Every structure is written in C-alpha cells, then in structure tokens.
Length: 361
Ligand code: FNR
Image 1 (cartoon, rainbow, N blue to C red):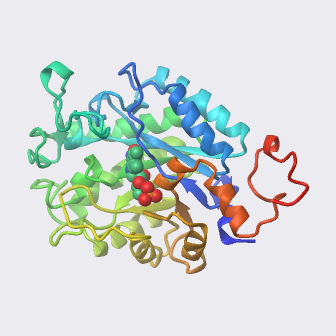
Image 2 (tube, rainbow, N blue to C red):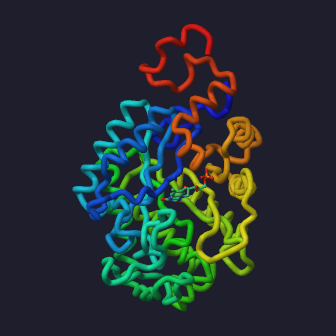
C-alpha cells in the first residue's frame, strides 16, 4: 500500500488517506456577506469526489474586518455556518473529511480580490474599504496603514477565533485549522518585521507567540478533546531578521506539547522576499518541524504522485497538501492511485465511477 493511501488518525477523526487539499480562497462570496455559494459546493465537492482524504476549506474570516477582500468567506455568523453545513454534508457523502481554516487578515485585509488582471492593493472608500488592524501601525508594502491593536482588541480577536471554531464544529466540519501564516494577523504577531510592540504581545519569542498560543488554547477549550485543531505557519520569511525556522520549530514543539494535532508548514508572505521556488521547495521546512515530533503537513509545488509519496516515505511529513495541481486536476488522488499501482478496488473512487473498472484500467 503506498503511504499516500494509509489512513491517519487525529484524535476522534480518522482520515482515509494522506492526500489533502490545502485551503485556497475562492473570492466567490458574491453577496459580500461571507456566505459560501454553489461555487464552493462545486469546487470542494469535485475534490471530495476526486478522492482527497481531507479538504481544508479556504481562509474564512472570524470577524468581518478579518477578510482579505469583500468576497472572502466567513464563519462569524450563523447564516455562514448554515451555508457551510450544506457543503460539509455533501463532502461527507463522498467519504471525505473537511476542515475549515479560521482566519484574520490583519494588515493585509481590505484589499481587492486577487484575481489575475483585476485591480490590486487596498480598497478605496468607494469599494467599501474598512479599517485594518495589526500588532503595530506598520503597513504591508503598498497597502493601507493598519491601526495598532489594543489589548482589548487582541482579547476580542482571540474570542472571535474560538467562536468561529464553535460555529465550524456546529456546521459539521471535522476539524479546524488556525491560519498563522502568510502575513495575516497571527503571523504579523510572530514576526519582528510587523510586530514592534513593547507590551507582553511583542518583543521576545514568548511575547510574539503569545497571541497564537492564546488563540490555540481558546479554540481547544471551545471544541473539546476529541476534535482536531491544526495550525498553519510560515516557517520562514526567507529574509534575515524575520520569524525563522529555528523559531518555527520551537513554536511547533510548544503547540505540539499543548495538543495541537498537526502543523501545516508553509512559508513567507509577511514581507517581500526572494523565495527559492521549485518542486517541493518547502518540504525541508516541514522535515525540520517534523523533527520536533509534531505531526506535519508538507505543501508547495508537490505535483507528482511519486514525488509526494517520497515525502512520506522519507518521513519529511505525515500528510501532503496538493494545491494548484488539484485546481488543474480535481481527481489527482485517483491518478496517484493509478500511477502508484493501487488496486482500483482500494482506490478512492466514488461508487458511480467504478462501473466498467472490472476490466483493465
Ligand atoms: C492559496 N493559498 C492559501 N493559503 C492559505 O493558507 N489560505 C488560503 O485561503 C489560501 N488561498 C489560496 C488561494 C489560491 C487560489 C492559491 C493558489 C493558493 C496557498 C495554498 O494553500 C498553498 O499553500 C500554495 O498554493 C502552495 O501549494 P501548491 O499550490 O504549490 O500545491
């Protein structure tokens, strides 16, 4: 049995394989109300049919001002949770699991949706711009200057993450992922480039990680002991002086010690950087984090089944996330099963697709 097709158990959840879909914003909540639509049903539904063991639904804001753009999904109210639950129910009919990424965009909020060829940068007043918040009043290059959060703002944001987790659990999601990567709010606290605070939420490692640790604990307290809670981090900023791999490994060990179920190891996007992009370029970061004993996911230009299988065989990660390759090919796991020689009876086909497979191919 290829490692990609071995199940993985996180607390009360057993996922049928280790090929998972990473969170990918669709910017498709046309009502500008954070309510997911038929697009999300078709997008996630197709990949559930395609054999992914677990789908992580896109960055979903825990408060309206935590959106990247007005078209982002949300999980801050019951109407959003109800719309998500329809999608969750369909995914479950496909024997797949589904998590949601809980997000707050911080200083990278209030921007135009990142569609190719569309307008870029911060929204204008005429587009419905809102005030952004961040650890310090330091803007992301070319974006609006955020307001420095007070201690009360921080406490409210932590509560909002926990409330988002509660709604997600109520909507039927099997797990949650806290978004602490890519230059969004929690990563902004981790990085000395964006966190210039002199109170207990800034300064040394303990200060910069405090908000994330409080968020993790608040989410855990909300969802209970049987429910998986994952955290996505940017394990390096690819720039000297930033939140780096040593700190990332230390953070992963702390989260792991508190019961965090999986560290999803991404990188970058809090400051512009020269990134050595290439096949599997973030796998060494995942391997370093895995070295702390934490359960990890590797992501980033994993495109071929043999390559992805090797990540698991090498022990560099416990799970692979297939992003853009899965946008091209919703049934990537079915191709992987075919190419890695898994008998079709054990491959993740919906029953509708098994007719005619009793012959060759
Ligand atoms: C992303 N990515 C992303 N990451 C994240 O943590 N939350 C998100 O909502 C999104 N949104 C998003 C949208 C789209 C269209 C793309 C292509 C990417 C990053 C994504 O999860 C993944 O880490 C990267 O795409 C790298 O993996 P691949 O695509 O090389 O397999």
